[in-house]
Length: 167
Image (tube, rainbow, N blue to C red; front, side, top):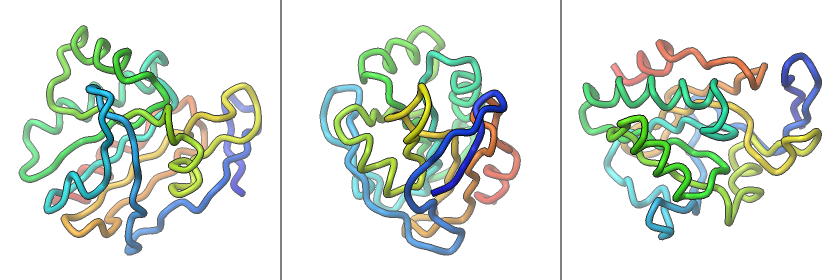
């Protein structure tokens, strides 16, 4: 169990956060059409997993915007914004913001399983049941190239480091 903070207050996070060089665990998330999204759906592509609490928070929304902007210049790469938001709420956010270079993926059906498999399952405080802020970059074979579990959930990740892992 890891301890992060949310605005300086301790928050416990459960699970094993994937290390650089390890294989990313499979997942079963929900797409904007309410269909299943798995890691295998993106086989042969590099993947950026922008894991966040909710697109209704300023920090998470900023991350989606920044990765959307960067995604247009990335070859053979998909950016998945993974949150606890309902799929239609995430889709509405992307439509309103003009974000068409990211794929939203919801943890609303399998949040605890995803959270534990990826070491981002918040198990204490008011955000319990949601996911901590993290960024993972995977190669075409799902090997982790970059891994950042943001220690202060309300802060942004190191976008440059994540994108550099793709070069």
